[in-house]
Length: 238
Image (cartoon, rainbow, N blue to C red; front, top):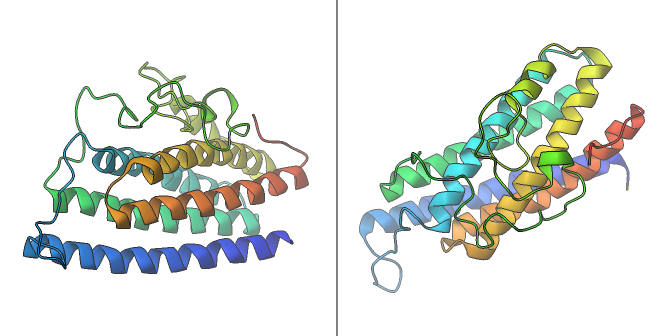
């Protein structure tokens, strides 16, 4: 399958997913406001410590960095293929982030919780291997979220460190393209692992559907970005 076809399929799947999730979100919101579901029973609201709440909080943070990274590389290269990919990632993940923060508002839950370890809501905790591991490098392929501080510590699995984000902003042309693709592959591996955790543990159907869509689209994009790296004489860091 050609790279352009993979990208087209991925974008189409993402658009369909967002449409379905928006429809489901509207229905879920209406039911929540009415205080019941179609069967007349009270609509369940996720607890503050639930997988649903934890996933919404952590993935919103994860997505925010992907959006920032995409805007950085857009201004560091003139390569249209990389710029289009960056735009697609930024647009998709900004929309998804908005939905997840909206759910937290709907549930009456805080968007951040102090002194709670990122990804602690996941069923297997720190020790699990990342779904689709092997692309993630030293921090991208691990399920463990760092609790350290400083420029060399990622906030959670797959995320770039502060130093890596700063470095990306200093590169241009092919160097920026390669580093962006490597960072984003790591980022997607961590995101897929977290999204699979929600598929396995979340209770809200519309959120499980969004998480499964993230798994499908981001795994496809990992393959696409790996091909783009090889065209530039480089490989993923893992």
